[in-house]
Every structure is written in C-alpha cells, then in structure tokens.
Figure 1 (cartoon, one colour):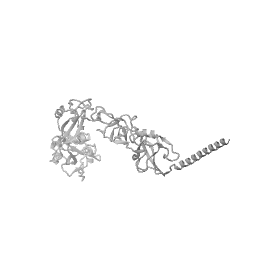
Figure 2 (cartoon, helix red, strand yellow; figure 1 turned 120 degrees about the vertical axis):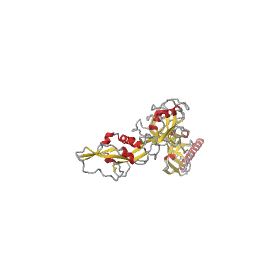
Figure 3 (cartoon, one colour; figure 1 turned 90 degrees about the horizontal axis):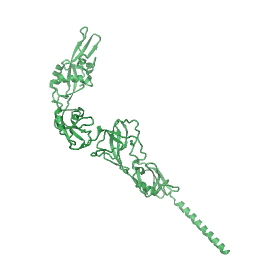
Figure 4 (cartoon, one colour; figure 1 turned 90 degrees about the vertical axis):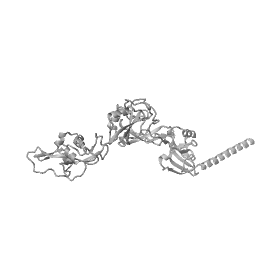
Length: 472
C-alpha cells in the first residue's frame, strides 16, 4: 500500500513537472513571435518591382515569423516557380513590412494572380533579397527588316496587349472593335519574353494611332528565310519583304550622276534565287521590271524618267536578283504664275476675276507649272522656251482645271444685262513678256479682255489693274 501510494505520488509529480515545463515553453514561444513595426505600399515604378522567387523561402499570408501567419505556397512550390519557364510565375512586389527583429518581408502577387502573400526579403528595405530577386521579364529584341504594311493575322487568337502577356502585372488585352481588316500596322519596338523566348512587336494602327499595343510575333524575321513566322501579324504579297533572292534595286540618277532615290522591285514569282536573271518575271501588280521602272508613280517625287522605253528595256534585259539597275531622271522644275490682261505687266488680274462666269482656271489647280515632258530642261534656272508658252502652257492651264478651250474663251464677267467681258489666252503676248524667263521664276500669263454679246458698246473702261502682287 505504501509502495503504491509512493508510486502514485511519484507519477503525479512527474506529470505535474511535465505540465509546468509545457507551460513555461508555450509562454516563451509566444513571447518570441515577431511583431510588424511597419507595412507600407511601395511607390517605385511598377516595372522596377518585377521579381522572381529564389526558391529559398515559402510564401505566407503574413510575414512568416508573425503570429497567425499561414503558408500560401511551400518552399518546394516556390522553388518550382523559381525554375519556371513561364512568365506567369514571375511576381510583382507591392508592399514591404518590417518586424521588430529587423527582418523585411515583401508582399507579392504572381503575374497570373494565382499566388499572393508575404515572403522573406532580407534585412534591407532598399534591395530585394532572401526569397526574391529583381527580374527583367523582357529583353530588347532586334527590329524586323520591314516595319510597315502589317495586318492582323488572327485577332481572336493573337490580339494586342498593354504589355507582352504576363510580363507585367495586370497586362490586359486591347479592344480591336474599330479595327478594319484592311488596316495596316507599323512596328516601333521589339521585345523578347525572357523565360519563353517568344518575340513581341509593339504596333500602331496606321488608320487610328489610338489603337496600339504588343502582339505576339512568333520567331520574327529572317531575311534569308523562304517562309516567315509572324505569329499575330501577316504581310500581303504586295508588301512582301525584299531579299537578295527576290528583288532588284532601281537606282534613280540625277543630272550630275548622283542618286536621287531608290525603289525595290519585288517579284511575285516563288523560289527565285540571287544572281538569277529577272527576265519577264512580274510583281504583285502584274508588272515586269521594265513596266515597274516606266511607272511614273515609282519615280522619285519631283523627277521624270529621262531614259526612253528602248533604253529601259535594254537595261532590264541584263537585270539579276540581288542586283541594281540604274536609270536617269531629270528634275521637273517648278514656276509660279501671275495672270494679266493686255501686254502691260501692270494690268494684273486677280485669278478670281479671271474665273468669273464659267470657271476656266482655278487658283488651286493652276498655281504651279512644271517642265513635264520637256526633257531638255533638267533644273530650275533653265530658260523656258517659246514653244512651252505657245503649246504646252495653255494645255497645262486647261488640263489643270479639266476644261476645254471654249470654256476659257467664254469665261465672262456679267455687268447688268447689257454686255459681257471675255478673257482669252494670248500665247504670243505671253511668250513676249516672258522672254528669257527661267524655270523657278514667276511666269506671266497674258489674256486678252474682249467685250462680247453686247447690245450696245459700253461706256465704261476695261477693268482697272489690281495692286495684288501675289504669285498664284
């Protein structure tokens, strides 16, 4: 009995002792929990707060050493995200907390929004450390050889984004509601996603520059490739990129032999090769190289082709892909014009007066004349010939307004119901007052003022001269 009591007392004391130890231990652990002394929003530029996990620390609902902190993502999960090849597994840091122990915790969210919580970040609020480090989610890529003429290939699959997808937190798609299928886009920037290696271009709609964003562009351009991987972009055959295997450079030479511009002829024929003869291969507009050169819309602005059709045919017969052909052009000199009636240069007509009745010549359309068609005149400063005044000038005045000679002859100013004044182009007087005039100078165009359809001769004099000296 004594032995049993003794054992019972001994066991009870032992249990009591264990309880006392447990109580002391619990109190000590509670006292050892850290406390948050500050927790503030980070104010630096958002893209400077892109981070990636290092895999050394878990993610918690609160700073990990604070009471009530629950694990959001284990250390194993964070290590997988650290080694991930997906941009969605990057993080954005947006708050920083500090404990009374001097430790720093950053609140982060994964780019896809799946994970959010606090992670140990070292002991310095000025630098990411511990469980995270700074990340460059994209790297600058090379621009494509061609930057214009793109179309959206499949907007439902590859649309525009405010940033390459998942490289910035909350990167979002851009509405393409107002984009037409025929709209073209221009590329102004290029970036690669660091983890995936995929290429994105920043493009702007040429018809509406408010529509702009990043689009997946596949592997980008390879100028020597026979096919192109463009992702969300496409090029029509008309805008196909020129390579040494499918194009010829047309070099336009001015009077001094210097280049005044170039143009690329790109064939629509498939599988052509460098140094192969172009022959009669055609482009998307069904033009041979010779047709392309003779097309005035391809000649540099302000110039006209000097070579004859026979010359062009001879030049293009020897053309090869990857090569250059040279053609001669002359500068189309430009002169402004003034209008007068009579031979005297003081009797100047306002173009509005001249055009009353049936509008014969408009100030807008007849303001500038060029030596188009006169290939002997190659620069400003060359003398304008009498032939130009006699035949070409009047033709230009008519052509500029789409009228015929009768319209000019019958242009009238009505004065009551009694008589009319008609202005008629006088080529002889025009040539006389412009003797020795040079292209680039003002040309004086003379009209005769005549009364027609009058019931009786008017008593008034002809219209008085104006003082307007503006060159029309």
